[in-house]
Length: 523
Image 1 (cartoon, one colour):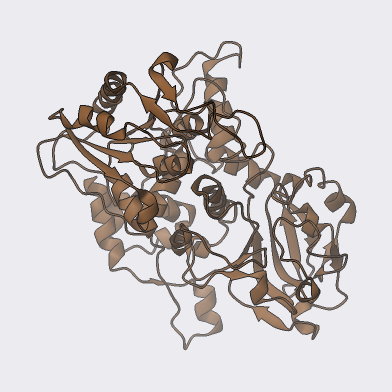
Image 2 (tube, helix red, strand yellow):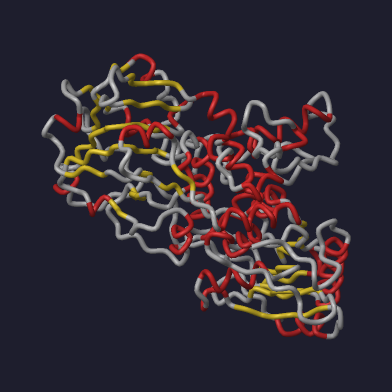
């Protein structure tokens, strides 16, 4: 920790002069490149990714120059230097042949190994001959693509009567163009995952064609976007679980696209691939990625838009993707990629950790629902059980009444988070490493938040005794039939207290749990 603080002090005052090649072309101008706003552990790895920048550190930062810390997707990254090692205490028998294979499987399913795989799959689809030409390269099944000097013709979008969301026909043939050598056979071979709009960029790129002249010299651009642009096809914006599929995959895409020191800069443009106005209770999360106003297709419709640099990031509902459709091998948890995402968001949104003011008591946050279904009918009786315990500091909150950054501030300073099955439990991503999520009742959907807790690496507890939970009725799904998610519940207070005590024990034995007020994780 002391070494990290030394480098931070050096870096805060640091301004880096850009490479000598820039200075040679324009000797009269001093180009400065500021370091990205990252947590210190992340910044060290960023500098190791770009050794030319690392070599320009001030002399008093030399203590970390020999650090070999890496993320885990780099080819020369040893397991010991990775951001985090998966935790795989569970039995591997019946799944893989060895414990090592179990760890590796998890790493490539849900950790920086997934990034490594995407990087290894990047293949040119349209090759440039000259620097001013266009280019396009993609991973398998067009999950991730990036290009230069591409034209997207959105003139027909303005003529459509219906609003666009999850549409597969936004573009027609010839409405995405580049001046480069297109390997159409190779591109068409990657079209297997276009069953839905959120699985692949195939629905858009099947319309790719070649322009006879360089794009920026063709006279065909009604609008030239100079800022690097991320075009996003997003999931449900009012559901935290589904919208964070978008944010998480955007974050993962920063690593796949990390070929330039500006990879983590916020002077980028976000373009959402729909014409609905963007609105979300979680919209502040975009501030972690961009300092610019988020665009939708409505902001650029009716124009031929030329992008100097464009990224088509990983998508929220990819087959065997990240977050939503992640297949997780049994017996493993603790993805470093998920932990890094948590730290990145909290750092960029400036959500502080506050050590407890009193003797080290467990801080418990109970999420009270104000929805029609999945309310806890004897909430007061349950909380009375906790208030009687002097080891607990308990607060009951309704997150829907708070801003998202206010919600995050509470979550980050909770040791145990309790709530009914619902999207609000996605907050577990932002709990401290030692914390526990108590899904009071999973409503017969046992894996959703249990798996997310495994990925993030926090403890998980849920109701165990079916005869001690009492639904109000059988539940009534809007489309007919009984359904456990569409009713309200009462719980046995004594059993509730026992499960909270179980969660508390898991928190206290965690290696990162602060034992005094002077120990806390870094912002």
